[in-house]
Length: 601
Image 1 (cartoon, rainbow, N blue to C red):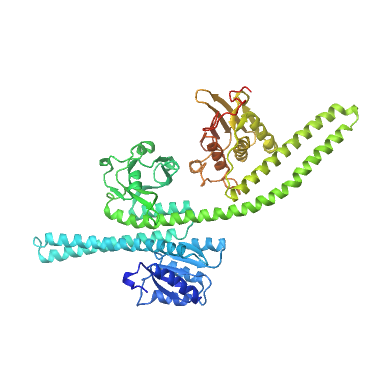
Image 2 (image 1 turned 45 degrees about the horizontal axis):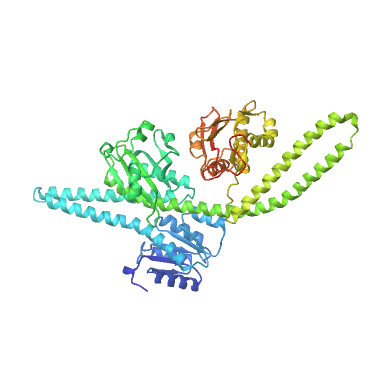
């Protein structure tokens, strides 16, 4: 085994199986790590508390099923006593609920036995880098302060009396100790705050609040990168006019945020007016004057950036290098935890997709008798009405037409459900079905939506209206997807509209721009800024009991698939208006031979 001084890090492996401990030790030793073994929780706790080896562990790997003090209790002890030391769970229990509980307690990874050597080594390396970055920060800071103190002492030694020199040395030592205490307190606060949460939004809020409290600053924000749109998105903001910036985006090469995101180097600006990189447009939009600012990169363990952390306007004095040193500790721990939470949410989503596949399979089986029964009902009704006496023909005809209309809605809805179930099955299998663009009329699609939701709206005393849809030209579109989009918009609006209110879908064409404009307006209660800011994203907030909020994300995906745009205008108490721009012909889609999108066949 390599000498401790030469090792990449010291790893404590806790597992009651000797073969497992030896195999993990062999893998990690080969990768350059020093390994300590413990066969149960009691010995693990004793090893890490030993006076001969205090806090000399960079990462802990712990099984859950171990004797004496069990794995969960052991992990809870480590997290409480040594919050800066990363813990990796290595277990044979592939249970989602257990993984959720462990991530909530602050473990950085949850590995299932048997684990591939490459995956184990990568996870350990990532954890050790996180811990060492935390520790090295204090070492480097101490060396810089020591040199600065020695230089200052040398420069003033001949100019001051010996008593004054001793006082100055004590003041410098006190200042150094105070800064070290501030950094340790920042690390303690952020560790306690982060390792109790796995929700990304909660994590970002806690990171920002902790940063502002420790530094004593007025405002701040966390911006995460959107690689597709090459933007930095304000995902969490604290301060005056914060609601204006929630969900806003800036080009990721603009301002101090863009400079730090691309360089990966933090920037402290004690006088923002002297830095031409400051994106002053944001101050104009929020009517907020920025005087001083620190911007730090948020990086994954491999060095790739995921966003930036901004802190603005220190309450007492100006932001300086000491503040940046403290914030560097916070950002280093925060970025990895945010990324871990994001990966955890992806893992939950993968589990949901698998369950959704099972549900979709059952739903398809349940739909089969419904489709058959609808067809049989249609045949029976046709036969029944054909045998009625002529005396009641007019009344029977009206009744027959109403029955046919209801059955048509049932058949259309079951067909759409079958199509959606197929899309779910394709999604579970990793297959993406491209849109099927054909000649389509918006009025026809909306008519089907109103038929499907008309009864629900009528029971609530809500009027469904259309304006100008019949005059719209035909467009090339995927009719099923448009139905899903308009269905979700109307269905989402119905619970928000009081009795006596209305939902109106209106439209007009803009021939010069080659688009049709459709507005879905309701007279409901409107949306607060924090709900509107996350609309059309995976972090959308639902206000319906039991709702997921993903309906609006589906709408956005449908509009994007058609090369269109969607915006929303809403204030609390003022209803909401969704404005959709759809091209007459989606980008890269040719008009089929013999068809027209000018409104003429």
